[in-house]
Length: 348
Image (cartoon, rainbow, N blue to C red):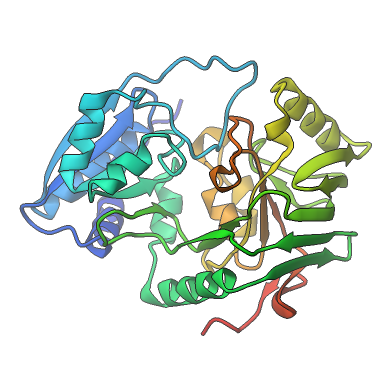
């Protein structure tokens, strides 16, 4: 197995992101990882924080046993902390938490408690640092993501269509929207690197219609570009029918059914990518162990559709699909923000 050496350029990139997070000399910083974390990123985090004069410490948790019937990937809900009180307390008191767990703390059950104490969390997605260094965020991206999040929060209806046959309606009233530009500098907030994504978690019984994934669209749970069409029919948030004759549809049907959980068929979130530096073809450039697919989630102009847990609709499950689609048109109250896969110039 190829072992990567530490590169000064990667330490530089990590320092840049931590500077965006307002880390200063003398600051305490917790580095959260687990025994199966990418050791290279954990090491780079430590070296960058020390170079900046911060005072880092490590919290390393044993990677827990997977008690599900299927492999779990890309949930954004790390189970590494295991609700251990002393660990939660340490992270609360750190002020700045660098999350290097495999799945990340974005949807972890302990995260609200940590944030409520005023800590800020930067999730370093489980990517090879070569991908991270290409996508160190910039203020222009922050401005656009903020504008998109504001627009989504004021939207009543999202309409998604495509030449492949997608015709999806989303009632956005009361939806919770999150914009991520790649760093966090405010207490009680969380961000992930890479960034450039805006997503909304709609309320219950708000999503209906047809969603057609075309060849070339992506199933990030499987880290796979589709080679055949997959058609999903949605009624009141749930995939009630999944059609397709190829391997892609067969694998999706089998994975969803394996959970034995109706909530695995429900919608988690909807949104779109905004990072001009994120590359569609990047998934083909890395071994599967070297990518978590966050870059693909952020590709400018994609429609990011996800199934699984949605706490804002009262739904919880470990089953999860992230499904970026590349040729859609996304309209917010009739205004096209993405047209046939191209992000429109409406966010400044």
